[in-house]
Image (cartoon, rainbow, N blue to C red; front, side, top):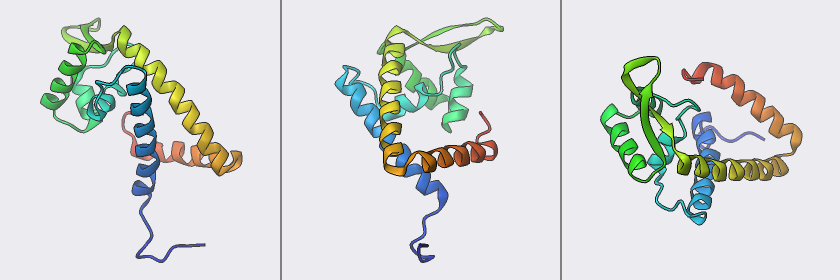
Length: 148
């Protein structure tokens, strides 16, 4: 069944709804686990921090915010104990933003919720459709994510 053109939503918007639902569930679980000082903006920046740390300029570019905005968000994350700034081993002049112990504990909670939500979505869609969706979105990422 197809939707009339005036009701048809673009693929970007259709991808946004489940993303927003996942983010909402993760933030709620984090708050329940005692990480109730994390804001959505902080979570979006923190989610882009690589396992070995990430430069602030890269975080800003990936989050589509200014370096100043990313810096303010990272400052708040540092004060809350989620991240730390460390020297970049590849450039003595640069610093990396890296997850601190509290941040890693929050990531563990987030990952558990992500697995639970994906399981619910798979149960709703069926295994075959969920797999097809993952394959299609992974392929779409090839042309939409310059940071993959």
